[in-house]
Image 1 (tube, rainbow, N blue to C red):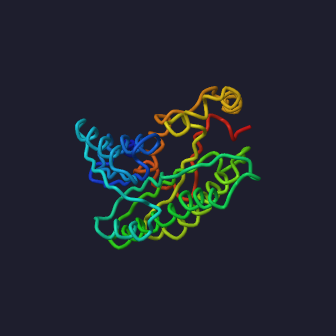
Image 2: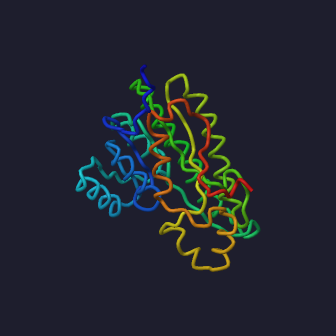
Image 3: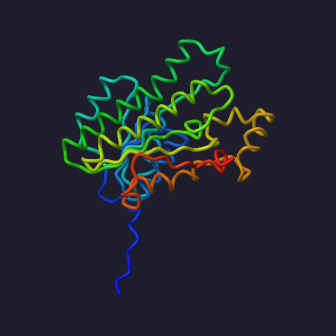
Length: 254
């Protein structure tokens, strides 16, 4: 009897791009992809952190390069993809948040959050997918969403708007791209402790309110997302597109 063989989580021979890769979730995604054998390009607006991260990946035997790119500069995004071989994996991770009550939100706040979290994410995915199609490469687009793309939250009107939009964007992209063998999915984490979020958790009232809703009783770590990134990047998820993997400790189950 020939037993079925589990698809490998290895990514040898594949090229991966991670935006917002200098720290936190983006850095963890880049490390996970490199550990699985992918050649990883780490992208951020400033060079320091991504150059250090790429150097550490190489020092540990992986393949990585740093590329400075402001993903809000759409002409620069197009030029970046035009000058490179097509990628097989995109982790569309660059994003921001300005938590405040909706009545305090300014036009500048709105533009900052929606332009980066939705507009830039769309056009990075578009450029990446067009390069895949031109090279007849199959691939996986992974958009970093949030549990706040499935529920609401106080002081999160802009963030929720952007992450709900990302969910719809990914579903529609999945339908457009399926005939080309390109998949589009989101990862929707709960609160992950990173350099960006750590200051919020110094407020004990806020920390307690978050932990009361995460049924597993702890904040997320970047390591909690690394396996999910690998799963969506490779062959183990070959029949998954247009969906969201919610990594929230039970927040949205209640």
